[in-house]
Amino acid sequence: MKIKSVKATWIHVPIPEAEQHTSDFGVIDAFDAALVRIETESGLVGYGEGRASVFSSGNNAPLVSLINDDFGPALVGENAGDPARLWELMYNGTRAHYALKRGRPFPALGRRGLTIAAISAIDMALWDILGRSLNAPVWQLLGGLTHAKLPAYASGGWAPADGIGAQLQSYIDRGGFKAVKMRVGTGDGEVADSVRRVHAAREYLGPDIDIMADAHGTYSVPEAKRFAREVADCRLAWFEEPVNADNKRGCAEVRATTDIPISAGESEFTRFAFRDLALLDAVDIFQPDPAICGGITECMRIAALADAHQIRLAPHLWGGPLHFSAGLQICAVSPAATIIEYSLGANPLLHEMAEESFTVENGEMVIPNRPGLGVTIDQDFVEKYARD
Image (cartoon, rainbow, N blue to C red; front, side, top):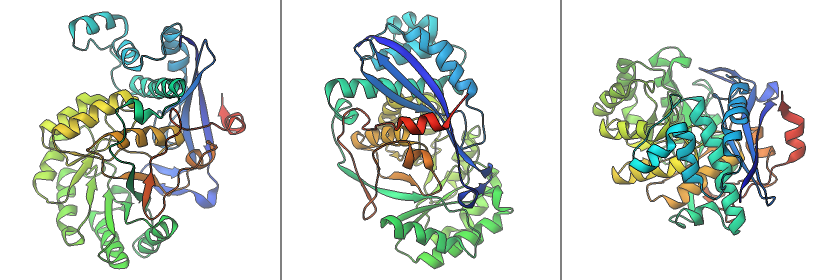
């Protein structure tokens, strides 16, 4: 199980113009990821996935370089079967021996951002290897099933008020979803524009479909309060990222003024940020992203925090198949997990990079039991979309 090599590749997949959408991040014309391949001396191979930014809005070259030139060489010769120990080694750097001896973190300077995204991708690959070596799914190694299947919600929803209902209904028709998520926020213009879109969605879908609204952290605190107040009669399942992730007290202030559940976390790194959200009573739902928050090892710690604080867990899973499968493994084990995000925007990474498919039937996702992360990478796809 000794690590022989660690190799990261930037995958850049253009989206056909007819399938592109525009959000507050701009035109989404591609999907990008840092694909990590770890090989052991015995020939076992595992894969992980990280990313530097949302969709096509960033450059993954620095993330790939960080993995290939910094973390990768430091891991060669280490035991791939020890993902938790290697997580501490990567997070604490040259002071990892202090951290392990004294029982508290001694983190390196880069304890957020690209550093944690790199750790996330490597950590996924290590768990993939461990599962494959034991011919067991990762969820089995994490403690076994708490959920054999979970409801899924369709995530998308960018259309204007006169088309949002039909767009969300098209998602429901594709998988029997009982819940859908739409985007709101500054990208709409004014708060009133978002309010009109939510009311239009509720009127079109009727009372029996759950609707989530995601502001991508673009509202000010007063705007978020106004939005929540003016859509109170729409019975939103949650209001996601009402304000930006740097304003946790502001998020808590919004939560204190509404009975709409507040969710956040896709922009947060490590358990320490989620601890702060919990202690500030800022959210009802944690949404860690396994590709940026610290991988499977750290996501399980975040899930334990959620359980301890009676906060629901609904990971952010808008990415490729490794990212998605990592979220499934965590949700399968955590009693705090309640629902799975399933992207309905154009997502070639999720649907084309793996030989397997993840399908939703009657609004539910069955947890797969394939070894490791259960993903077989299509090497032709990787060769076609690998970017220097």
